[in-house]
Image 1 (spheres, rainbow, N blue to C red):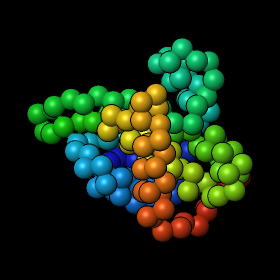
Image 2: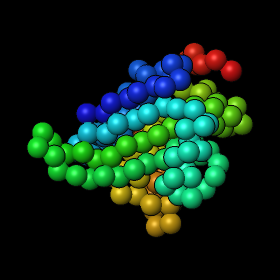
Image 3: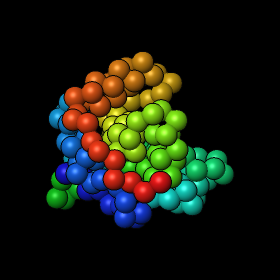
Length: 142
């Protein structure tokens, strides 16, 4: 199960859930994942604490891969909404689409993909999954 929490109150959760469901199915990912949509400040704090980088980042994945009494837990994903907005504007697509892309990217990391080793395959899978999703209208505040 993918649980998506939005600290900003402005993410399109249904389009994110669709991306999560499609990615989990495509990767045959098993177990629970928690996703948090948050702010620049939260992104900066998490990036500093876990990577030693004092700057916000668009997406962070925290693989856990732990067997629990009530099932399997894959890990957590944090997505920075302000950076997603900026990246969407630069890419010329909707913020909802950018959030889907970042969620797919985070799930690929939880499935074991790594930029250093799997860069081309990660990009191919991201695009394949993203292209299989219906277009979503943007309901985000600028």
